[in-house]
Amino acid sequence: MFNSNTKFLVVDDFSTMRKIIKKVLDEIGYKNVVEAVDGKNALEVIAESYKSGQPIQFVISDWNMPNMQGIELLRACKDHPDYKTLPFMLVTAESEQTQIIEAAKAGVSEYVVKPFNAATLKAKIERVYNKIQVSTEKKAA
Amino acid sequence: MSAATKLNPQHPFLDRDVILSLANGVTETLQTMAQTVANFEKPFVAKEWQTPCQIAVFLELNADPYHGQVRFHFDSSVARGIIDKMLGPQVEEMKMDEILDGVGEISNIFFGLAKTKLNTIGFKLNMSTPYPCQSADLPAIVGEKTLLIIPFRVEQALCYVELILY
Image 1 (tube, rainbow over the protein chains, first blue to last red):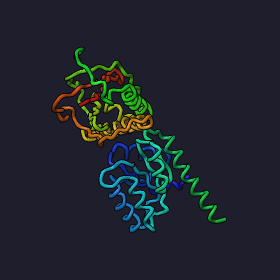
Image 2: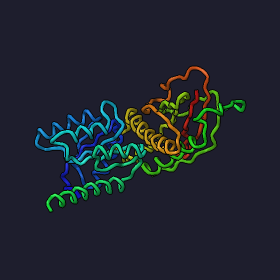
Image 3: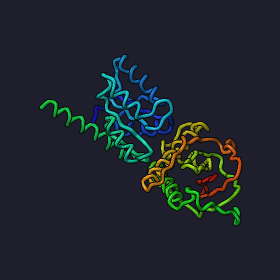
Image 4: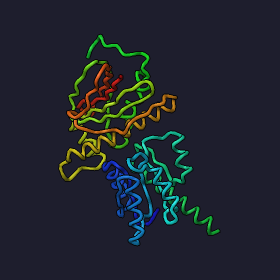
């Protein structure tokens, strides 16, 4: 699993969902969690975190949000030289095939469908970690 | 409830799959996110109906040329109980805006699940963002409409899914 000091950014316009995800992360052992209320706010938080020398290391974002949607935030991160390798998990209440394909094309690391429980979120974070490990090993080989 | 009330049989929201998808969305969400059981009761049709609940979430439906609205009605003690179970017991008394945020999110999940199921069977449905409010602040629907009310019980308290067809 990721180091317990890994800095997570949880993005959702509903504070209840941010609290639920924070609670699950806390239960898993991740205490370093910051929040943003939409994609636009998330980009500001990410930029600030890089400036401060304590960059965000994992983004968990809702899809449907005002101002900037999760998929747009994902694309903005992938287009940015500093953020393009940032692990990015999308959380959504809709699980249509077209949406999953759109997210995969945009480079999402994992996709979580609501409703979810703590075990699902933990398993998805582990999958992201394993993917990164495999990718790193391939590059090193 | 009015026994004389008839629903437009052509209205696409008046469909077994729509009703079942909404009910399953509620049941699955409450079970997974809040370990809470919701038991659905017999739906009924009405021309006018006044919610006995204190908290509501509404969203607009559109499947051109048909329009409607879905409203989820929650007893305030049920809403608090569900949020408590999702977040763990709260140290401080929950404020109304926190309750509305919680039911807004949970209704978002109810309807997201229902919409996904409906779209996979070819029922193309557009919806607005769910808007949580106190029941007293629900917008009035002007003009001819028909209501389909689907009651569900959570820990003895009655809550409702209201489908407004117009």
